[in-house]
Image (cartoon, rainbow, N blue to C red):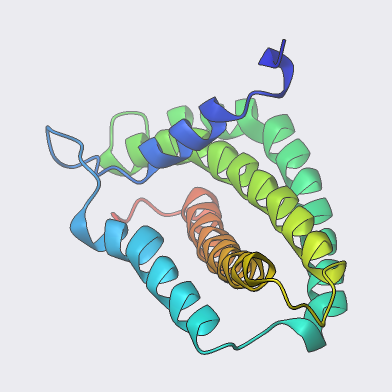
Length: 183
């Protein structure tokens, strides 16, 4: 029933893009694990614990994430349209080089990373909208806990969104780089 909206493959494929391609085991490197999982989790829990709220910036965050999410949809369409051309250019310019192989991998991975970031932006928008409709004065203990959890989740998703945008930028830079210099 839910196979049309199943996003498990997007998340799984994104996690695969974090694996090292220069080792036989192809495991997620310790640095990537710290950067993409532990660091955002610790920062978001810390900000939520010290009650640093997003109340004053909720409208701006909704606007920014919406605009960037729309931009990512357009970028995904552009990358999809250029995918065949990029693969052919890579095969013609750098057929057997290590840089050519990396560019072929990055062509596929940038598509996956953009799709993942669009998914993160959708979840982030839902969380931001839910947060904006929460009552500001509440007495129930469960409501206070829900507020802390939602605040931590918003910070976590914002950090993941930002880090994935940086990864996409780096991979697009590598794709469009014309020289055969190993990166």
